Image (cartoon, rainbow, N blue to C red; front, side):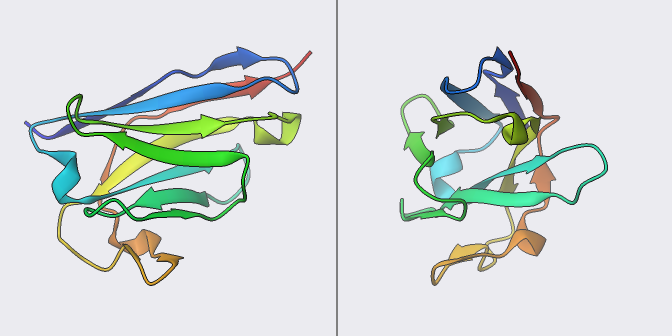
Length: 126
């Protein structure tokens, strides 16, 4: 059974940091591109980062966000530093299981990410 499960979210004060996890089961995630996305209520989904099957990373929102992969744990991480209230959202990971150009040539092509987790809530507040 293919599954992606996000974890690591929670309530954090402004200026804090989080490392979110995206654990895969049923497939080896180092064979596919993995992306991180977020969506706040009433707002469109944002592309954050992706990592290609060969380990090349794209960070769309700047240096506060850093994507990495642990092949032994079959897990992709998203490190978020200097959290701001505007970062409050549900954070999702997704996989491109079809082998499309989802994380190539310096661009995140979100339409090619077809397999999604249920998300983890990040709330940044005092």
